[in-house]
Image 1: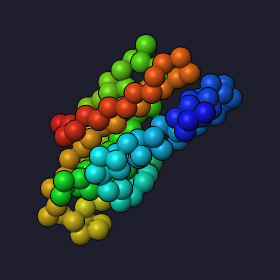
Image 2 (image 1 turned 45 degrees about the vertical axis):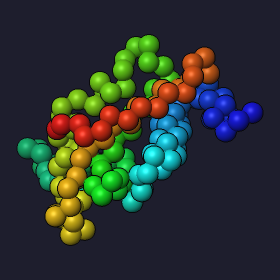
Image 3 (image 1 turned 180 degrees about the vertical axis):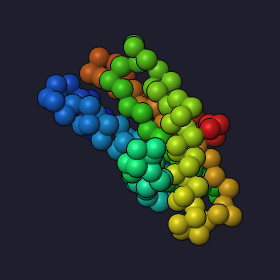
Length: 144
């Protein structure tokens, strides 16, 4: 059984943590895919407080991957689905989510003194199931 086949086998598990397990598997596949295409992974799952909402509750944001690709800082959102039958994973990253990624990215650049670096948002779609072929696609430089 190949590495991908063994990961696909694990996806058929229907335990209550299935979606988080699926997300972790998708993230691992996405990291390997991106690294093979020249992305340098700088940080995974960067979380930061963005402020407080009108109720005073803390608002946090997260970026799945911070990478460098072709001399540019890339903030990568990974969406994993067990099937593309019901929704395209790219459609799951709506305008609100893209703006949040942009805000977190600006905060990341300020925290680490990288404000002069050009940056972009990339979305990685991972679709996998035991019945379909593994499919990984990257949408580069997505507008916020």
